[in-house]
Image (cartoon, rainbow, N blue to C red):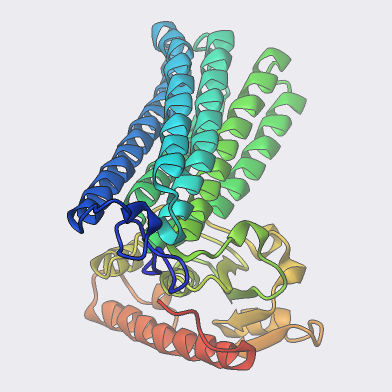
Amino acid sequence: MSSDTESSSTTPTPGSPADPSQAGGVGPASGSHLEASKQRDLDGIRETTRRMGDLCQQSLSDAFRALMEGDRQLAYAVIIRDRHIDALESELGEECLRFLVRHVPAGASLRYAYGAIRASLELERVGDYAESIARQALKLGGYHRNVPVDRFKRIADLSLPMLGDAVRAFANQDAALAARTMAVEEAVDVLRTELNAELVRLFRDGKLAWEQLHPLMTVARRLERASDQAHSLCLETIYACTGEDLKHRGADVVRVLFVDRHHASLGPMAEAIGNALNEPRFLFASAGLEPRSVDTSTIAFMRERGFDLSRVAPRAVTEVRDLDKFDVVVALDAEARKVFQARSRRLVCLDWPLQDPLALPDGQPAKREAIEASCTFLKEHIQALVRAILGEQGPARQA
């Protein structure tokens, strides 16, 4: 949680000598009792949030498995389970309200309780999406001829872990994990767009019946919406930890886009390093001119340093949402520089020439050395860029 205090010099804390509630000779031990009671209630809210999040994640996973395996019994189990998720939403809301009334908290505790109420709404919607997917599974009845199953699995492999990470970030008040998790949402959006285009093409070619098309597009939309709710949960986490309400961030946010040719090594590295700074005034993204899957050697190297690039989906520059709203574009190779050098004057274009590790063979020491050198370069230059921009806008947010 945030390190900001729960009281100020003008507002006495419960249990302090200046607190009017201490009239009548209640001793200092009462303050310790109140703090212990407050912590127990916070732990209870945290545990209920975890239970609700785990149940939502299990329902979403089961619904998708029911779809893929044509398991009617599992689909019905998900539909029935939604009642328990609704009940947990009510339970969590009541716990938070009791906490607010009983302890009249301020600062981080107030934000956490308020955030938990909003988080319960986000999770309840995920339960609804799982139920919807289960109902579509019943409609399809396991009939998967010509269905692009691999594309569905790629979306599920991103959205399901994203939800789990978002719940864990909120429960543990881990703002860094929340910031990393948020970045997955855009990749899910890209995959859903590609999937919808594939489904429509199959329908037009007569390879997919209308009775399949509508349920399958509904499933894709529900999986994508689940990632949206996970993203919102991450925003609640950052709000509870820092007091920064990123849901209503304005023009003061600096958007930085890293562009290389294949979006398979340098770009994903740069985006991950930027997001790891956990600086709410910045939004980092990456894309490629001819995107490919992320290089396995780069994934292994970055994993050693605490970054997970295994879920990064190939992203083309043309698929970047709100491209015209970015403030800084960093070209990581000569081809990317050519594309952006003629852009508007408002856009700041930077040229960071790096050796592309993709040009080197896997398993060779030279490739690992190139990845390590690129990682060091990117870390140093991204930090310098952030400090320079913050110097223009004012002092950095205190940790």
